Image 1 (tube, rainbow, N blue to C red):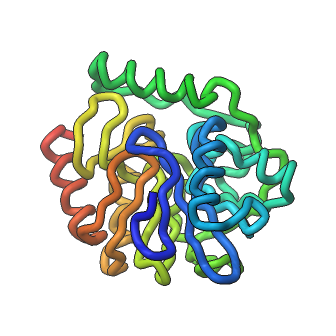
Image 2 (cartoon, one colour; image 1 turned 45 degrees about the vertical axis):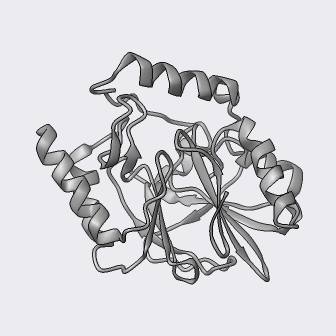
Length: 241
C-alpha cells in the first residue's frame, strides 16, 4: 500500500511493517508476521523492485509480531537485521517477557489472534544474527534512518525517524488501533513491559516535525507527531494509566 512517494505499508491495521524506497535501495522497518512475506513480495512487484534491493531491516523491537520474516531475509538473502542492543537477545529468542494483557474485548482479540495465526504467528523464526544499534545512531541504509531510543514497551524499543519520507516509525511505542479492544485512535499499546516509561519516552519525539507517525498496529497517522503524542497522553489519562 502506497502511503506517499517512497513510503509503503506492508500488511494492514492489525499488523504492519513499512518500506522506505530510495534510488539506492530499500529499507524495511519491522518484518511483521512470517506469512506477510507474500504481502512483501506483492508490494515489491508493484513498485518494480526485488528482495535483493532491500539493504537492511530495522526492527523497532524484538517481539515476535515484528520479526516475522526477518530471519528469512537474513538467512536466504543476506539482509542485515538491525535492532537496539537492549532487545538483541529478545530478537534472537534468548529471552522474553509476559506483560499483562489489560482490557480486552472478545471480538477484537479473536480477530487479532485469528489473523496472526493465519499469517504464521505461531511459527516465527527468531533472528540468528543481528546488528546492534543505539540511541542516536544514523544508519548507513537508504533514507539514513535515525535511531531514537524509546524504552518502555520493551527495554530496546526504538522509533525510527526517516526525514526523507517525513515519517517516524514507532513500533509499539503507541498504537492507533488497540488489538485487544478494537479501540481506534492514538493510545498506549498493549503488552507493554513498563507503561509509565513508555509514556514518558514519547516525549522524546516532541518537536520532531514528522508528518507521518507509523505504528506496528493501527491506521497510519498523518497529522503530525506532536498531535499524536497529545492524543496518546489524553487517552492514557482518560483510562487512568
